Length: 216
Image 1 (cartoon, rainbow, N blue to C red):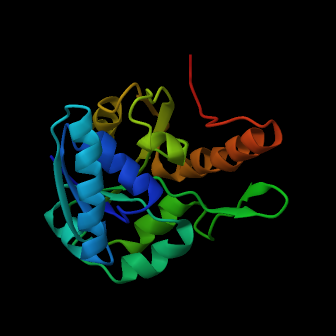
Image 2 (image 1 turned 60 degrees about the horizontal axis):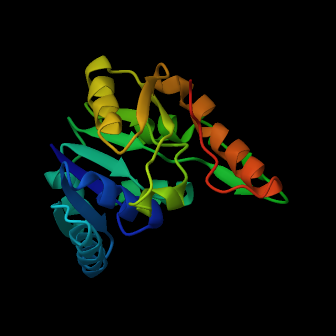
């Protein structure tokens, strides 16, 4: 399975490339192909230090979409609309949204679009035949790149297509110690996205690091 990461040079995108490329063909996308290539070189070096083989390719965001079976939108919410408007070719693909619409004053709070969630907005922007799944929303961004530490979070997955949901849950379960849970249809993604500002506030006000979810 080929996984394309739109925004693959950011913290989450680079971390996902590190974690996924030993098991999948990962296509790292960026607005600037040179940045994607540089990110792949860094990821490859980090993995080789740990004697891990990987499959990484640095390209433009458009080529990452074109060549992937599954596309991850590893971009901040404010960049979602302009990024998607500039891209084509999502038909018949699974699109994973780890996007959380969050604002910050003296604390973090959930600020969803009129559609109710980032995932629902993304589905409305993509062509028919595209399947959107919300996943990885509550994984701390900096933990992705800590290769010597296990990712032991629970990951809620929301999707309207059962086959796509199974594919995404299998993908989740292949990463470190992550455990996927069926969290219902895509319309329930607002519940998942809104947990992230809660976790950020708990971490901030209690001076904790990397607060996440774990269902037991």
